[in-house]
Length: 418
Length: 162
Image (tube, rainbow over all chains, first blue to last red; front, side, top):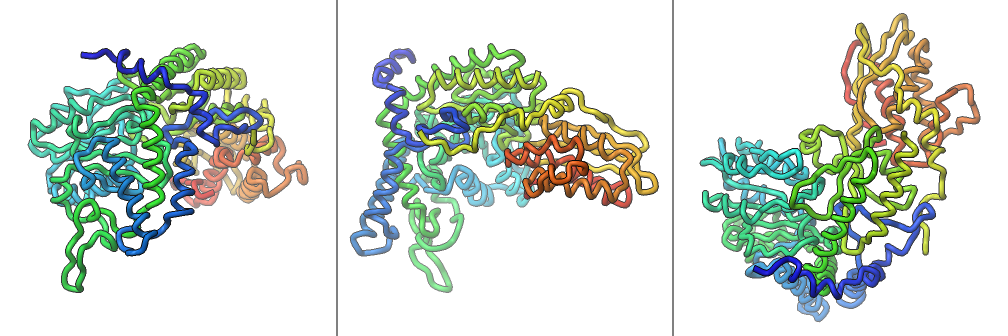
């Protein structure tokens, strides 16, 4: 087995964070008179010029509707859109472009599966297994379909450090389990869940698994075939792409069996008032004019990250996370939330006697953008017994100096409130 | 380098010493036995929660107290509000709500009528921090709910749409 160091080392040589930062125009600004330190990447990432250029080029040169015109622009737009699908397929190593459905975001991907797969597979007494660290987007869609079908949610508990209790997970998988839907990388805790192992466990009992990769796809290599995931969702805007474009990967066999999600143009092959025949995959799930420019921008983002090398990105962020963990631990009265052994890119914390909201306002005045609040994970906050956290989250363009700026700002927080 | 942020403002304008003091040692921070008005405030955006208790006799607020969790601004606001409405008629409390609300949303100049809000004018700085306006006004929305209720009614006050 090759060691992690030997995989990461060659690509690390070419990783120059100063050069990378120059690719992101938005980072060259000051806020409140201080250089912008953008550490809210788990909410959304900034966009490299390659993505902005791709959007401008698409709208300046190729814009037309897809899959219907015989004219040249429509052909070019269709080509660009389908090329983007092929790029995404390669990025996550799906077996076929028929398995790549473009959505608005990860949330829509989960809702699509809940409303099609869920509604046809779930019945009274059936169960969907999720975890205590899910984002609301991987809770509410299942609650909605469970309520309608008389099914129920079962929740995998977590340890105080923020790791899943896997023996409890095995216990929860029973004769009534119809689906497991689990986050790959927690947006609050940074925990990387052992999804490959969890999928294997579920599959031994014939249970399919959806993985919410919203926070994972831009931090680590994702190979949906190696994972053997039945569904994998992620969003473009956290992956340095535009907002409004996301991806649902689904195994072709499952997607074939599922009814359409929305009706409309593009998802049909023929329509009469008596009967409609649905289009082939993936178009069956893409009703209406899609976000063509968004897909083109997402492909540009994937190309950008791929050119840098996902291994190099992972290694850079891992090094920064270790640096940040040590630096934050040195701030008096600060407690890190989420200290699972396997984690990435997220530093959630609370400070004695200071509400996260006040932390957010004070560090913003120092130019440092972090997120504060419940992070759309209220059940997790309840489990942890805290109303909110402050969260710094990392991207490939962040630096040690930016972590230092955060720590300096946190010292100002202490000064003000103690 | 461009700077798109608001003009540099001193954090002390927002976090005045009085506010920091009320945050550290909130006044009237207790549940009230024998309260005859009670309202619940909740800001779904940040999770701040507030229980407000009033003892009202003959249309006058005899006592006010609160419990809950929230940021410095919301805690200090509740602390100073409960202090300042004691002894006030319900109609005066409604008036104070209006004035406070106008001040923190930037629709009124507290210096125009300094006597009306008194010490509460320390919250003026909040108007320069639009995302924090809700923190300052949560307690006051909850107060209005308690004041308007004829009986003991528990209401959830959402200030999300403010």
